[in-house]
Length: 210
Image (cartoon, rainbow, N blue to C red; front, side, top):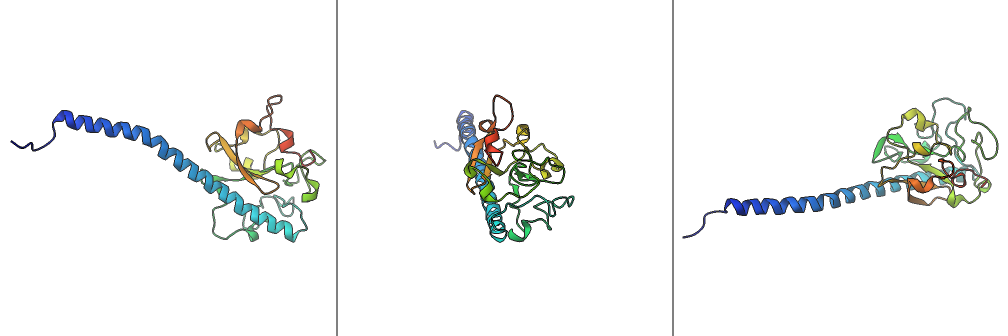
């Protein structure tokens, strides 16, 4: 006599096998999706760097400023009237990370002139645009990186300084993408940027003259 179907035990075994496979594969798929978003974020930073390079070419090697003019209120670099907008592709979303679309990329106040309330002076916050020739060890200096997803937009607009370690993101597997002053982009674990003696970001990653 031919069997017309599966027994209950056989069905339960099949379901159990499927459940085991799903539990194994789901983290793999999730990690692959996270890796794809991290790569997309790096691509965004690469395009922003191209815009920065074109700006520097037009302005004899000087870095862009967050506001134009420097004390012009809420006229930030990423806005329609911002300094980099003419060099960025229109209609793109490259000013934010795919994992954190509510906030723009975060700039280093010690390298990029932030606003008229910054404290002037070498090694402190910048109120003037530096030339690339002014910046020592550009491959070790952070230019742009990613803010923590919990921050308010008003905090991100003003950039970050060396005391703002806790404002850095960690949404890419515990780390963030960084655009360095020399133009290369890399993923770094957030903890690797922290100076354990102070709890702040290592000064060598921040100050233009170190």
